[in-house]
Image 1 (cartoon, rainbow, N blue to C red):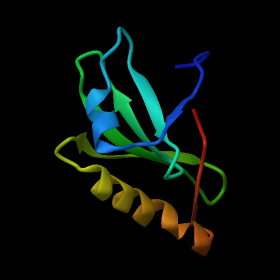
Image 2: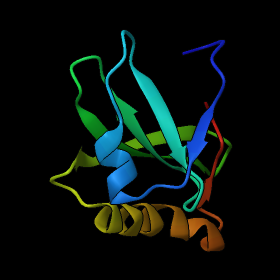
Image 3: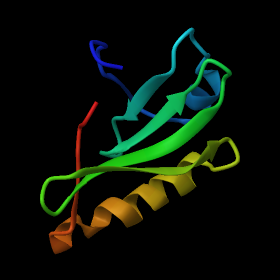
Length: 97
């Protein structure tokens, strides 16, 4: 996905439902929850992911689940559980592309 501008939008259930597949996979980052994003495949599968940086600077990505089976509220909660460890010096949200 190099060379593409980062897409950022405030996530709502309606916004996520309205995301349409494109010829190539793309990601949209949630403006309300750092590190949370949804990946949309050409087949129309929408998957929540969280991207964060662990101690030592390594970037990790975790798949949280598919939308709409996993709700936005639950995805934000899972993302918070993972990135919330940043206060302990273990994990910090990242804006990795």
